[in-house]
Image (tube, rainbow over all chains, first blue to last red; front, side, top):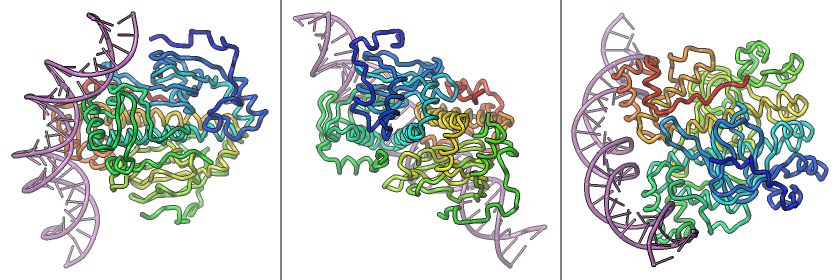
Length: 252
Length: 252
DNA sequence: CGATGTATTGACATTGATCAATTGGGGTGG
DNA sequence: CCACCCCAATTGATCAATGTCAATACATCG
């Protein structure tokens, strides 16, 4: 339950990466910013390294900054009164976190690193001010938020898909796509989350996830080895899932 | 499948309501704007009346404007390849629609009026420009989008709630809250959507929704008459649903 | 090499979907 | 104004999909 905030080992290595050097530049906030605008943005930006299992923020925390995942992976979830938990999403490099906290100035979900993860923090107050001065930044912020809506909707569609196989197939598809967006091989997926997490995310029992992934492997649709997954037959996968989630493309 | 765009009976009655006269002012975009800023906003704003069943925009349409529901109710949904449909959300007065279209400049869901509905359209290009000039407006836009995330998350939590009763109970709770936010009696709910819609929204069979609502009535938790619903015992309702969705409050 | 936690696999129970029939409003036209 | 029709909603009976419980396999790490 530690929050990584407390650790002040931030610029320890001295290499405080600016957006200019960052490989995610095109996916992230800086897209279409000019050089001097980039510097302005970089000037308000903070870094942290989060270890697996650590929390980036907790439900109830005062909202202070938006976060960008630079590397690694993050899950966000809420917990109910009865202690039940619901995973809201997985977040990969280039994606932003924390929008939900903005409205009430308080986070209403918890964000946890699924593996060693680098984070950029954008203090919201400053970001807002800078955005007013740089229209391109404002525009890009809106776009990124919009993208989040699309992702949320895909999650919803997955949960709504009635037969469990469809949900699992859709899940694999989305993971594939999101890897593709990062410029990686779409067919190779390293699951950063546990089967329990996947089950929770899709609202299925862990055992069901296991079984259905095994089934997909038996049918030659995927190769599966622990958390390493390879798509062998994308067409079948799409056929099984009943959808082609071509929804998500990045802006021009 | 008509889109209401074509109908140009907009300011027909001559009473083009500005934000200043609108009862939703505090819930909506104008919150915390000054008078002259309000006028600026009102100047770019268009109105339409949508009849029940008509579409406000369709999946695939070019994204042109954000919409605010002024009165009535709207549902948004996506359809899959197999013709399956998933309702993404219900939208009530004061809420904004269309953010999902911003990222790719194309709507990826369809919005349909559940009853006679009034809409304000905010041409996005202009809105963006105005927002740059009015920091308070930009801020408010971000907040409204953030609120949407919270609502989406509540939907997710509902779908994830395992026993069907919980989902239904949660649904009633959220409807109650959203009525409350509009300043109406929290215990009186007029469902604007069909049982089929509710079922789809919660990922339950229509029959299950019917049965469980009937059960809640038998147990004295609610009164139910067709689409008119009254909460008799909120505590039990919360108890049954296992959550207290106190998540959503409006900004100060 | 044993310990611990994650994943898989099997057997069984149960929830909620499906199929089918009935009820009941609300609107329409005679 | 009434009779009819149509669609939405309800209710009942049955069954399959998936959750649950339990045992085992497998990896990783100390």
